Image 1 (cartoon, rainbow, N blue to C red):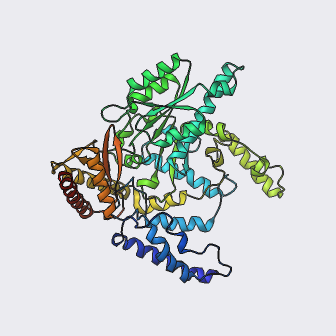
Image 2: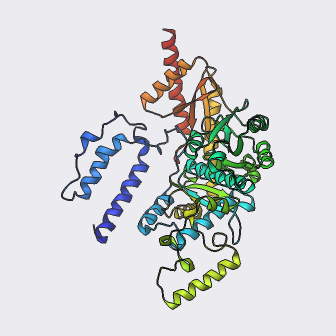
Image 3: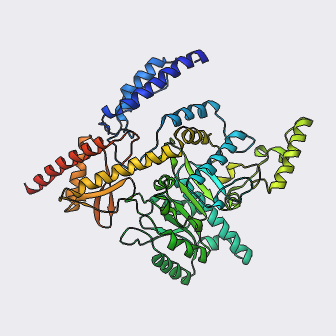
Length: 507
């Protein structure tokens, strides 16, 4: 494919995508296929001769689309939203075209520097404490991770390295293994499973703190666990506080938990994967009060801020905490004054000398003008993801993004109101943002049958959760194009299926 054909086919693809998104409401939200459906539909080996673009595009509709769950259908109410917007799609095209791998500043300066600035923009939108911003000479800063799961793992590994080095400095005879076997981390019993997974990968114990009646982690329960474990010779080192839990969008009490972590010298990481986007709205910013006690904070713009996956925003107060855990500098990744193995002109040498001097005046390499994000993450390679943030923030503006969040919250409360009007149903958790947890009054089996009928009908899509011993249905406002009419139609459909379930139970 040459540039001429690319221009033509690119326009066709943009039209295909626009038609898909414009017509997505007419597609069945959940696919009607069985596991293994796709393999018989495609050849067992790659073609020896090239296929045509027309054939490929035809096969997208014939083979791929029947197996797609349409997350951006306005009748998709499962999980949490995944962001989608035309500015972000256009930025993704540019990102793919530039194709840089921004593991270091030298690998593509704009890739690194735009990310640093965009993370400061976003941090200011959230009114994060100054300590989390990079600015010109800040000790903190932001980085785009692939997911909130990665951010939690990165934070845990950084905290683990920090405590091991601290204890070894105080007691040089201590081995890393002796410390590791005593380390223990904590999260609410409502925390995402990725926290437990981070513990498995990090080789440390994770303990669940019982949540209160509103499914939140409180100071008393955390303090009790810390005291008990310290008495047994364990070493508490890491706490994950969740703002907007996956099951019911509950909020751990930061203003209580934060001071305990500070007093105990325990790393506090905040996981606000879904809810974090809402904090750009003044009326929801109080949900982040207490962030000043955290060592790291993360949320996913790729969930609810119209920036396509993947884009998980993570901030740290002390960037050296991350760099200290992950920094390795093989010769082939060094640049500038460090890269003594790379020949260059006198002009280049003069440039790097001047740049080196400016970095020294601003602080260390990582604290000054150069940031090498490979030291902030697990993988080496990274895409130019900040382009999506730049396009979206500029084309929507803060007010446009706030309006989008408020619309989703308003629709969730509309659904909550509809549920309250039907005495057969109950609301199971406080509706704060865009998630409603509800169920039929009665047995878990009754609600399992209702969900089975809902998802079998494939007119809307929901997923469940367990809240204590109750099987609960979750309705999350997800699609960018969802409106009141879709919410009301979904509720009408649920009511009709509930009638069928209750009638079947009587029979």
